[in-house]
Length: 211
Image (cartoon, rainbow, N blue to C red; front, side, top):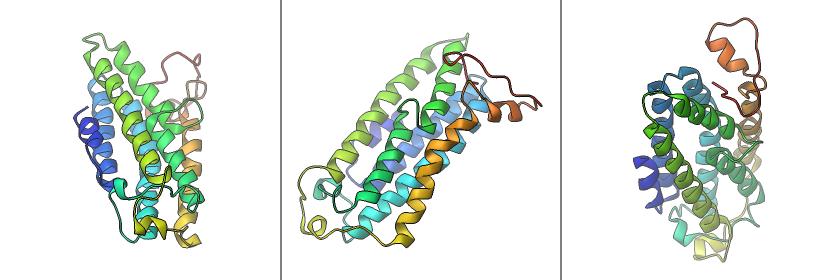
């Protein structure tokens, strides 16, 4: 929650993502604390891909905008940087946990369900839910400031899409930011089963616990 609150107050594109990482690590620790290590590992796996995508996407923006990192000095990059914009949007939706297509939704849901089922207290659940809202807020603000509206500086005005050596990795990471969710859905909790040493994978109802 603290990481998410600090991220809301940042204007440097990389600092927003850095404090977001702190917040997501907090989710993993929360999962461990409520007795769901499988959910923690699942989120570690999905987060590795969509956060790598977001950081490389930020690097693509910074490179194109001549090292401008203040989101208040960017804007309007969605059209000249379509690939970066599309892949960054995929990473954002995975991080925010947009249902049902993105991997971050499934791994976060596993953690939230585990927190809900924890008999000691529902406080971790409430903290996690507030952090979910803050994550959606600061990432939506980041995308809006960078890719929408008018270009607010000379650097942004001259920005254009980067060469394939920079954008092809974005596409690969965007693919896995979606597809990795399939490893742990309630219908086919393959990762959870393997981590628990089970030889067979038994699915559950869609809205039952995925951990």
